[in-house]
Length: 207
Length: 272
Image 1 (tube, rainbow over the protein chains, first blue to last red):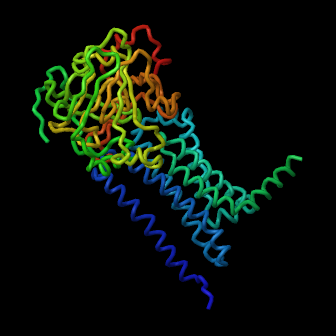
Image 2 (tube, chains in turn orange, brown; image 1 turned 180 degrees about the vertical axis):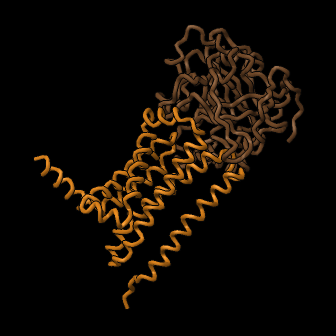
Image 3 (cartoon, each protein chain N blue to C red; image 1 turned 90 degrees about the vertical axis):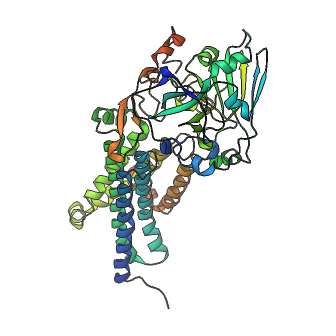
Protein backbone atom coordinates (compact mmCIF):
# COMPACT_ATOMS: atom_id res chain seq x y z
CA UNK A 1 0.00 0.00 0.00
CA UNK A 2 1.31 3.40 -0.92
CA UNK A 3 1.52 6.07 1.72
CA UNK A 4 -0.32 9.28 0.98
CA UNK A 5 -0.35 12.42 3.06
CA UNK A 6 -3.86 13.63 3.72
CA UNK A 7 -5.30 16.86 5.07
CA UNK A 8 -5.30 15.53 8.61
CA UNK A 9 -1.58 14.80 8.48
CA UNK A 10 -0.98 18.36 7.33
CA UNK A 11 -3.03 19.62 10.24
CA UNK A 12 -0.85 17.73 12.76
CA UNK A 13 2.30 18.70 10.93
CA UNK A 14 1.30 22.35 11.26
CA UNK A 15 0.71 21.98 14.97
CA UNK A 16 4.18 20.46 15.31
CA UNK A 17 5.67 23.35 13.35
CA UNK A 18 3.88 25.93 15.52
CA UNK A 19 5.08 24.29 18.71
CA UNK A 20 8.66 23.68 17.66
CA UNK A 21 8.98 27.25 16.43
CA UNK A 22 7.24 29.08 19.26
CA UNK A 23 8.32 27.14 22.34
CA UNK A 24 12.09 27.62 21.88
CA UNK A 25 11.61 31.27 20.96
CA UNK A 26 9.66 32.05 24.13
CA UNK A 27 11.98 29.86 26.22
CA UNK A 28 15.15 31.56 24.97
CA UNK A 29 13.82 35.04 25.66
CA UNK A 30 12.64 33.91 29.09
CA UNK A 31 16.17 32.65 29.86
CA UNK A 32 17.66 35.84 28.45
CA UNK A 33 15.56 38.11 30.62
CA UNK A 34 16.55 36.08 33.69
CA UNK A 35 20.30 36.09 32.97
CA UNK A 36 20.33 32.35 32.30
CA UNK A 37 21.99 32.56 28.89
CA UNK A 38 25.64 32.59 29.88
CA UNK A 39 27.87 35.61 30.22
CA UNK A 40 26.62 37.48 27.19
CA UNK A 41 22.89 36.89 26.70
CA UNK A 42 22.78 39.38 23.82
CA UNK A 43 25.15 37.34 21.65
CA UNK A 44 23.26 34.15 22.54
CA UNK A 45 19.92 35.62 21.53
CA UNK A 46 21.35 37.05 18.32
CA UNK A 47 22.93 33.75 17.32
CA UNK A 48 19.92 31.69 18.26
CA UNK A 49 17.38 33.85 16.41
CA UNK A 50 19.66 34.31 13.39
CA UNK A 51 20.53 30.64 12.95
CA UNK A 52 16.92 29.59 13.56
CA UNK A 53 15.66 32.03 10.94
CA UNK A 54 18.12 30.52 8.47
CA UNK A 55 17.13 26.97 9.45
CA UNK A 56 13.47 27.74 8.90
CA UNK A 57 14.11 29.40 5.57
CA UNK A 58 16.11 26.36 4.40
CA UNK A 59 13.31 24.08 5.62
CA UNK A 60 10.79 26.10 3.64
CA UNK A 61 12.98 25.71 0.57
CA UNK A 62 13.14 21.98 1.19
CA UNK A 63 9.36 21.57 0.98
CA UNK A 64 8.79 21.67 -2.74
CA UNK A 65 11.69 19.35 -3.74
CA UNK A 66 10.50 16.84 -1.13
CA UNK A 67 6.88 17.15 -2.20
CA UNK A 68 7.88 16.61 -5.81
CA UNK A 69 10.23 13.70 -5.16
CA UNK A 70 7.83 11.79 -2.93
CA UNK A 71 4.81 12.81 -4.97
CA UNK A 72 3.04 14.35 -1.98
CA UNK A 73 1.86 17.63 -3.44
CA UNK A 74 -0.31 18.41 -0.41
CA UNK A 75 2.91 18.98 1.57
CA UNK A 76 3.20 22.38 -0.15
CA UNK A 77 0.60 23.57 2.36
CA UNK A 78 3.19 23.81 5.16
CA UNK A 79 5.57 25.94 3.13
CA UNK A 80 4.01 29.29 3.92
CA UNK A 81 3.99 28.56 7.66
CA UNK A 82 7.72 27.73 7.61
CA UNK A 83 8.42 30.88 5.63
CA UNK A 84 6.42 32.99 8.07
CA UNK A 85 8.30 31.57 11.04
CA UNK A 86 11.57 32.29 9.25
CA UNK A 87 10.34 35.89 9.12
CA UNK A 88 9.28 35.86 12.79
CA UNK A 89 12.76 34.71 13.82
CA UNK A 90 14.40 37.25 11.52
CA UNK A 91 12.23 39.94 13.11
CA UNK A 92 13.26 38.77 16.60
CA UNK A 93 16.89 38.81 15.40
CA UNK A 94 16.62 42.36 14.06
CA UNK A 95 14.71 43.68 17.08
CA UNK A 96 17.19 42.05 19.47
CA UNK A 97 20.02 43.72 17.57
CA UNK A 98 18.36 47.14 17.92
CA UNK A 99 17.11 46.71 21.48
CA UNK A 100 19.87 44.73 23.18
CA UNK A 101 23.01 45.05 21.06
CA UNK A 102 22.71 48.70 19.96
CA UNK A 103 20.33 49.68 22.76
CA UNK A 104 18.37 52.05 20.56
CA UNK A 105 21.41 53.94 19.29
CA UNK A 106 19.58 54.83 16.07
CA UNK A 107 22.43 56.77 14.56
CA UNK A 108 24.69 53.78 15.03
CA UNK A 109 22.04 51.52 13.50
CA UNK A 110 21.88 53.63 10.34
CA UNK A 111 25.65 53.99 10.01
CA UNK A 112 26.17 50.25 10.60
CA UNK A 113 23.59 49.36 7.95
CA UNK A 114 25.31 51.64 5.45
CA UNK A 115 28.95 51.02 6.34
CA UNK A 116 29.14 47.35 7.24
CA UNK A 117 28.63 44.99 4.31
CA UNK A 118 27.53 42.09 6.49
CA UNK A 119 24.91 44.26 8.17
CA UNK A 120 23.85 45.70 4.80
CA UNK A 121 23.21 42.27 3.29
CA UNK A 122 21.52 41.03 6.47
CA UNK A 123 19.23 44.02 6.52
CA UNK A 124 18.43 43.59 2.81
CA UNK A 125 17.50 39.98 3.44
CA UNK A 126 15.27 41.11 6.29
CA UNK A 127 13.50 43.60 4.01
CA UNK A 128 12.87 40.86 1.46
CA UNK A 129 11.49 38.50 4.10
CA UNK A 130 9.26 41.30 5.41
CA UNK A 131 7.89 41.94 1.93
CA UNK A 132 7.27 38.24 1.39
CA UNK A 133 5.57 37.87 4.77
CA UNK A 134 3.30 40.85 4.04
CA UNK A 135 2.26 39.36 0.71
CA UNK A 136 1.83 35.83 1.95
CA UNK A 137 -1.96 35.93 2.26
CA UNK A 138 -4.32 34.39 -0.29
CA UNK A 139 -5.76 37.86 -0.78
CA UNK A 140 -2.36 39.32 -1.76
CA UNK A 141 -1.71 36.34 -3.98
CA UNK A 142 -4.94 36.97 -5.93
CA UNK A 143 -4.39 40.71 -6.01
CA UNK A 144 -0.84 40.45 -7.36
CA UNK A 145 -1.64 37.77 -9.92
CA UNK A 146 1.42 36.76 -11.92
CA UNK A 147 3.58 39.35 -10.20
CA UNK A 148 3.22 37.35 -6.97
CA UNK A 149 5.45 34.54 -8.21
CA UNK A 150 8.04 37.01 -9.48
CA UNK A 151 8.06 38.72 -6.09
CA UNK A 152 8.32 35.47 -4.17
CA UNK A 153 11.24 34.28 -6.29
CA UNK A 154 13.21 36.81 -4.27
CA UNK A 155 13.31 34.22 -1.49
CA UNK A 156 16.33 32.72 -3.28
CA UNK A 157 18.12 36.05 -3.18
CA UNK A 158 17.25 36.34 0.51
CA UNK A 159 18.81 32.91 1.09
CA UNK A 160 22.05 33.98 -0.59
CA UNK A 161 22.13 37.28 1.33
CA UNK A 162 21.61 35.50 4.65
CA UNK A 163 24.41 33.04 3.86
CA UNK A 164 26.69 36.00 3.07
CA UNK A 165 25.61 37.79 6.25
CA UNK A 166 26.52 34.71 8.22
CA UNK A 167 29.92 33.99 6.71
CA UNK A 168 30.98 37.66 6.91
CA UNK A 169 29.99 37.92 10.54
CA UNK A 170 32.46 35.37 11.90
CA UNK A 171 36.04 36.12 12.86
CA UNK A 172 37.79 33.06 11.48
CA UNK A 173 35.74 29.92 12.13
CA UNK A 174 33.98 29.64 8.81
CA UNK A 175 33.18 25.92 9.06
CA UNK A 176 29.56 26.29 10.11
CA UNK A 177 28.70 29.11 7.69
CA UNK A 178 30.38 27.06 4.96
CA UNK A 179 28.14 24.09 5.78
CA UNK A 180 25.13 26.40 5.49
CA UNK A 181 26.36 27.58 2.10
CA UNK A 182 26.48 23.94 1.07
CA UNK A 183 22.92 23.31 2.23
CA UNK A 184 21.65 26.42 0.47
CA UNK A 185 23.38 25.63 -2.81
CA UNK A 186 22.06 22.07 -2.60
CA UNK A 187 18.50 23.41 -2.27
CA UNK A 188 19.00 25.94 -5.04
CA UNK A 189 20.35 23.17 -7.26
CA UNK A 190 16.83 21.66 -7.43
CA UNK A 191 15.68 24.91 -8.99
CA UNK A 192 18.27 25.03 -11.72
CA UNK A 193 15.63 24.59 -14.41
CA UNK A 194 13.67 27.47 -12.94
CA UNK A 195 16.73 29.72 -12.87
CA UNK A 196 17.52 28.81 -16.47
CA UNK A 197 14.01 29.89 -17.46
CA UNK A 198 14.32 33.11 -15.51
CA UNK A 199 17.61 33.97 -17.18
CA UNK A 200 16.13 33.16 -20.59
CA UNK A 201 13.14 35.38 -19.93
CA UNK A 202 15.37 38.16 -18.71
CA UNK A 203 17.61 37.91 -21.78
CA UNK A 204 14.58 38.04 -24.06
CA UNK A 205 13.40 41.19 -22.37
CA UNK A 206 16.80 42.78 -22.89
CA UNK A 207 16.98 41.79 -26.55
CA UNK B 1 43.48 27.36 44.70
CA UNK B 2 43.69 30.62 46.72
CA UNK B 3 46.65 32.95 46.28
CA UNK B 4 48.16 35.41 48.72
CA UNK B 5 48.55 38.91 47.37
CA UNK B 6 48.37 42.59 48.18
CA UNK B 7 46.04 45.10 46.57
CA UNK B 8 47.65 47.62 44.24
CA UNK B 9 46.34 50.95 45.49
CA UNK B 10 46.58 52.67 42.10
CA UNK B 11 44.79 49.91 40.20
CA UNK B 12 41.36 49.91 41.77
CA UNK B 13 38.14 51.19 40.30
CA UNK B 14 34.63 52.23 41.25
CA UNK B 15 33.26 50.41 38.22
CA UNK B 16 31.14 47.32 38.81
CA UNK B 17 33.21 44.16 38.58
CA UNK B 18 32.12 41.52 36.09
CA UNK B 19 30.93 38.51 38.13
CA UNK B 20 33.42 35.66 38.41
CA UNK B 21 31.17 33.10 36.74
CA UNK B 22 30.87 35.33 33.66
CA UNK B 23 34.62 35.90 33.45
CA UNK B 24 35.20 32.17 33.58
CA UNK B 25 32.46 31.12 31.15
CA UNK B 26 32.83 33.65 28.34
CA UNK B 27 36.24 33.16 26.78
CA UNK B 28 38.01 33.44 23.48
CA UNK B 29 40.58 30.65 23.66
CA UNK B 30 40.37 28.94 20.28
CA UNK B 31 42.76 26.20 21.42
CA UNK B 32 39.69 24.84 23.22
CA UNK B 33 37.06 25.71 20.61
CA UNK B 34 35.68 28.83 18.98
CA UNK B 35 32.39 29.27 20.85
CA UNK B 36 32.59 31.46 23.96
CA UNK B 37 31.44 28.60 26.17
CA UNK B 38 33.82 26.01 24.63
CA UNK B 39 36.95 26.81 26.68
CA UNK B 40 35.17 26.27 30.00
CA UNK B 41 33.73 23.03 28.69
CA UNK B 42 36.88 21.64 27.09
CA UNK B 43 39.70 22.93 29.29
CA UNK B 44 38.88 21.47 32.67
CA UNK B 45 41.38 18.61 32.44
CA UNK B 46 44.12 20.91 31.14
CA UNK B 47 47.27 20.11 33.10
CA UNK B 48 49.36 23.13 34.12
CA UNK B 49 51.70 21.52 36.63
CA UNK B 50 54.51 20.85 35.71
CA UNK B 51 54.96 23.99 33.59
CA UNK B 52 57.97 25.81 32.23
CA UNK B 53 58.13 29.40 31.11
CA UNK B 54 61.37 30.47 29.49
CA UNK B 55 62.64 34.01 28.99
CA UNK B 56 65.25 33.98 26.24
CA UNK B 57 66.59 35.74 23.17
CA UNK B 58 68.40 39.04 23.51
CA UNK B 59 68.97 38.81 27.26
CA UNK B 60 72.04 38.49 29.42
CA UNK B 61 70.56 35.89 31.74
CA UNK B 62 68.04 33.56 30.13
CA UNK B 63 65.55 32.24 32.68
CA UNK B 64 63.38 29.20 33.08
CA UNK B 65 60.53 29.38 35.56
CA UNK B 66 58.77 26.27 36.82
CA UNK B 67 55.19 26.08 38.07
CA UNK B 68 55.99 27.18 41.63
CA UNK B 69 58.15 30.08 40.43
CA UNK B 70 55.16 31.60 38.64
CA UNK B 71 53.45 32.54 41.89
CA UNK B 72 56.49 32.68 44.21
CA UNK B 73 59.29 34.48 42.40
CA UNK B 74 57.53 37.84 42.44
CA UNK B 75 55.28 39.58 44.94
CA UNK B 76 51.73 39.17 43.78
CA UNK B 77 49.27 42.03 43.72
CA UNK B 78 45.66 42.45 42.70
CA UNK B 79 44.99 44.88 39.87
CA UNK B 80 41.51 45.69 38.64
CA UNK B 81 41.63 46.28 34.89
CA UNK B 82 39.07 46.85 32.18
CA UNK B 83 39.31 44.24 29.42
CA UNK B 84 38.08 45.42 26.03
CA UNK B 85 37.57 42.70 23.45
CA UNK B 86 38.00 43.58 19.76
CA UNK B 87 34.46 42.20 19.35
CA UNK B 88 33.17 45.30 21.21
CA UNK B 89 32.30 43.79 24.59
CA UNK B 90 34.15 44.47 27.81
CA UNK B 91 34.58 43.27 31.38
CA UNK B 92 36.11 44.58 34.60
CA UNK B 93 38.42 41.95 36.08
CA UNK B 94 40.38 41.71 39.33
CA UNK B 95 43.61 40.07 38.15
CA UNK B 96 46.38 38.81 40.40
CA UNK B 97 49.94 38.87 39.18
CA UNK B 98 53.05 40.94 38.79
CA UNK B 99 54.63 43.44 36.43
CA UNK B 100 55.88 42.05 33.14
CA UNK B 101 58.75 44.52 33.54
CA UNK B 102 59.92 42.76 36.70
CA UNK B 103 60.14 39.46 34.84
CA UNK B 104 61.94 40.95 31.83
CA UNK B 105 64.40 42.90 33.97
CA UNK B 106 65.28 39.78 35.89
CA UNK B 107 66.61 38.33 32.62
CA UNK B 108 68.64 41.52 31.99
CA UNK B 109 67.56 42.56 28.48
CA UNK B 110 70.28 43.63 26.03
CA UNK B 111 70.02 47.10 24.53
CA UNK B 112 69.55 45.49 21.11
CA UNK B 113 66.19 44.03 22.23
CA UNK B 114 63.38 45.97 20.55
CA UNK B 115 60.43 43.57 20.78
CA UNK B 116 59.11 40.91 23.11
CA UNK B 117 57.54 37.82 21.56
CA UNK B 118 55.17 35.54 23.49
CA UNK B 119 54.12 32.01 22.70
CA UNK B 120 51.27 29.84 24.00
CA UNK B 121 51.80 26.17 24.79
CA UNK B 122 51.57 23.89 21.77
CA UNK B 123 50.10 20.59 22.90
CA UNK B 124 47.49 19.15 20.52
CA UNK B 125 46.91 16.26 22.92
CA UNK B 126 45.51 18.67 25.47
CA UNK B 127 44.22 21.36 23.15
CA UNK B 128 41.60 20.04 20.72
CA UNK B 129 41.69 23.26 18.69
CA UNK B 130 45.34 22.61 17.82
CA UNK B 131 44.58 19.05 16.78
CA UNK B 132 41.77 19.91 14.39
CA UNK B 133 41.41 23.01 12.21
CA UNK B 134 37.65 22.60 12.48
CA UNK B 135 37.76 23.02 16.26
CA UNK B 136 40.48 25.66 16.34
CA UNK B 137 38.98 28.11 13.86
CA UNK B 138 41.66 27.72 11.20
CA UNK B 139 44.39 29.45 13.19
CA UNK B 140 48.04 28.40 12.79
CA UNK B 141 49.21 27.29 16.21
CA UNK B 142 50.96 27.95 18.49
CA UNK B 143 49.29 31.28 19.17
CA UNK B 144 51.90 34.05 19.18
CA UNK B 145 51.78 37.66 20.28
CA UNK B 146 54.24 40.48 20.69
CA UNK B 147 54.79 43.90 22.22
CA UNK B 148 57.33 46.57 21.57
CA UNK B 149 59.88 46.51 24.42
CA UNK B 150 58.76 49.89 25.79
CA UNK B 151 55.16 48.64 25.84
CA UNK B 152 56.25 45.49 27.63
CA UNK B 153 58.18 47.48 30.22
CA UNK B 154 55.28 49.85 30.89
CA UNK B 155 54.12 49.45 34.50
CA UNK B 156 50.56 48.62 33.38
CA UNK B 157 51.65 45.49 31.50
CA UNK B 158 51.24 42.52 33.77
CA UNK B 159 51.63 38.80 33.96
CA UNK B 160 48.51 37.35 35.60
CA UNK B 161 48.44 34.08 37.51
CA UNK B 162 45.04 34.51 39.11
CA UNK B 163 41.70 36.29 39.22
CA UNK B 164 39.18 36.88 41.99
CA UNK B 165 41.77 35.76 44.55
CA UNK B 166 42.39 32.33 43.06
CA UNK B 167 44.73 30.77 40.53
CA UNK B 168 43.59 31.21 36.93
CA UNK B 169 41.09 28.65 35.67
CA UNK B 170 42.40 26.93 32.51
CA UNK B 171 39.93 28.73 30.25
CA UNK B 172 41.32 32.10 31.36
CA UNK B 173 44.89 31.18 30.44
CA UNK B 174 46.32 29.14 33.31
CA UNK B 175 48.87 29.02 34.68
CA UNK B 176 50.16 32.36 33.43
CA UNK B 177 49.01 34.92 30.90
CA UNK B 178 49.69 38.41 29.72
CA UNK B 179 47.34 41.31 30.48
CA UNK B 180 47.77 44.55 28.53
CA UNK B 181 44.73 46.60 29.47
CA UNK B 182 45.01 49.36 26.85
CA UNK B 183 45.02 46.88 23.97
CA UNK B 184 42.28 44.65 22.57
CA UNK B 185 41.97 41.39 24.43
CA UNK B 186 43.58 39.19 21.79
CA UNK B 187 46.98 40.76 22.62
CA UNK B 188 46.74 39.35 26.14
CA UNK B 189 48.04 35.91 25.21
CA UNK B 190 47.22 32.94 27.41
CA UNK B 191 49.07 29.92 28.85
CA UNK B 192 52.50 31.28 27.95
CA UNK B 193 55.53 28.96 27.69
CA UNK B 194 58.04 31.24 25.97
CA UNK B 195 59.00 34.89 26.07
CA UNK B 196 61.68 35.86 23.60
CA UNK B 197 63.32 39.26 23.19
CA UNK B 198 64.13 40.11 19.58
CA UNK B 199 65.37 42.97 17.43
CA UNK B 200 62.79 42.47 14.65
CA UNK B 201 59.01 42.77 14.90
CA UNK B 202 57.71 39.23 15.48
CA UNK B 203 54.59 37.88 13.77
CA UNK B 204 51.34 37.96 15.76
CA UNK B 205 48.51 35.48 15.29
CA UNK B 206 45.48 37.59 14.41
CA UNK B 207 47.53 40.01 12.34
CA UNK B 208 48.86 37.09 10.32
CA UNK B 209 45.32 35.78 9.82
CA UNK B 210 43.71 39.07 8.71
CA UNK B 211 46.12 42.00 8.63
CA UNK B 212 43.47 44.42 7.35
CA UNK B 213 41.36 43.73 10.45
CA UNK B 214 43.90 43.25 13.24
CA UNK B 215 47.02 45.36 13.48
CA UNK B 216 50.23 44.69 15.40
CA UNK B 217 49.47 47.44 17.91
CA UNK B 218 45.76 46.76 18.48
CA UNK B 219 45.44 49.68 20.85
CA UNK B 220 41.84 50.25 21.91
CA UNK B 221 40.75 53.16 19.73
CA UNK B 222 37.16 54.38 19.30
CA UNK B 223 38.17 56.33 16.18
CA UNK B 224 39.43 53.37 14.17
CA UNK B 225 36.62 50.97 13.27
CA UNK B 226 37.12 47.32 12.72
CA UNK B 227 36.31 46.90 9.00
CA UNK B 228 33.17 45.01 9.96
CA UNK B 229 31.95 46.85 13.04
CA UNK B 230 32.28 50.11 14.92
CA UNK B 231 34.67 50.39 17.86
CA UNK B 232 33.15 53.65 19.12
CA UNK B 233 31.19 51.95 21.89
CA UNK B 234 31.11 48.64 23.72
CA UNK B 235 28.77 46.47 25.73
CA UNK B 236 29.92 46.11 29.33
CA UNK B 237 29.23 42.64 30.63
CA UNK B 238 28.10 42.69 34.25
CA UNK B 239 25.19 40.84 35.79
CA UNK B 240 21.56 40.90 34.80
CA UNK B 241 19.71 39.68 31.72
CA UNK B 242 18.90 41.17 28.36
CA UNK B 243 17.45 44.38 29.72
CA UNK B 244 20.37 45.02 32.05
CA UNK B 245 22.95 45.41 29.31
CA UNK B 246 25.05 48.50 29.25
CA UNK B 247 26.37 50.14 26.09
CA UNK B 248 29.06 52.64 26.97
CA UNK B 249 31.42 54.77 24.90
CA UNK B 250 34.84 53.24 24.26
CA UNK B 251 37.74 55.36 25.49
CA UNK B 252 41.09 55.84 23.73
CA UNK B 253 43.60 53.33 25.12
CA UNK B 254 40.65 51.82 26.98
CA UNK B 255 40.80 54.75 29.39
CA UNK B 256 44.51 54.24 30.21
CA UNK B 257 45.65 57.59 28.84
CA UNK B 258 49.00 57.33 30.63
CA UNK B 259 50.29 55.07 27.85
CA UNK B 260 49.78 57.67 25.13
CA UNK B 261 53.40 58.81 25.49
CA UNK B 262 54.44 55.48 24.01
CA UNK B 263 52.84 56.50 20.72
CA UNK B 264 53.92 60.11 20.35
CA UNK B 265 54.29 61.15 16.70
CA UNK B 266 52.70 57.91 15.50
CA UNK B 267 49.74 57.84 13.14
CA UNK B 268 47.46 55.51 15.08
CA UNK B 269 45.14 55.14 12.08
CA UNK B 270 47.95 53.63 10.11
CA UNK B 271 49.45 51.70 13.00
CA UNK B 272 46.15 50.37 14.31
